[in-house]
Amino acid sequence: MIELKNVSKSFDDKKVLDSFSAVFDSGEYLLKGPSGIGKTTCLRLILGLIEPDEGEVILASGTRFAVCFQEDRLFEKESLLTNILAVNDNVSEEDAEKALLELLPADSLDKKAGELSGGMKRRLAVIRAMLHDSDCVILDEPFTGLDDEARTKTITFIKEHLNGRLLILTSHDERGLEDFSVISID
Image 1: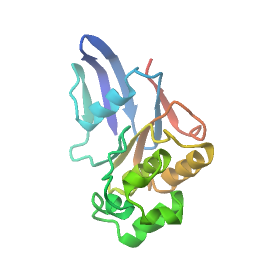
Image 2 (image 1 turned 90 degrees about the vertical axis):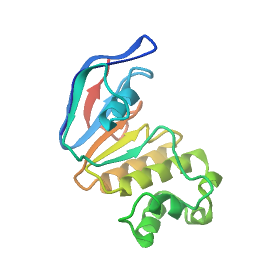
Image 3 (image 1 turned 135 degrees about the horizontal axis):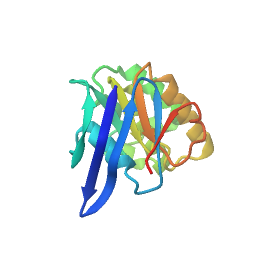
Image 4 (image 1 turned 180 degrees about the vertical axis):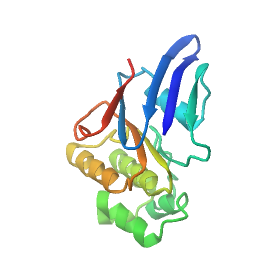
């Protein structure tokens, strides 16, 4: 369980979160709200990348996160397999390749990450996060640049690889996420 209690955060005198509270228990959560409202800030607070100005973030000590940031953060000059295996000690080449083939065409496996289209890079970043050994998966706008078919396949992939972990994701589009618990930032 992760809890944010009356969390406030400002950047350059602009209050992004103002006494925001939420509880993320087991399950799948969609954190939603308009652009610039503080969704990514909320995720960064949960991850401990930034500290709140007020309030507190409560989570179990030793919570392990798998993260797909808004930026893909790939090793552009490396193969797709290397991108997965470099951050996933527990994943075999065979399992990594199998996962890649669930979301990407077979001919892409011979490419470097930097040679992929934007949507293919995004799917690679999602695959890498979903294969990571963790207690909680955080996906920040994981469907950016994906067409409807790729989006649907990616949602299915995420659900099939969640394995009972807590999932928190942000998205401007709720299609395919109707069974998620929604937490709005206003």
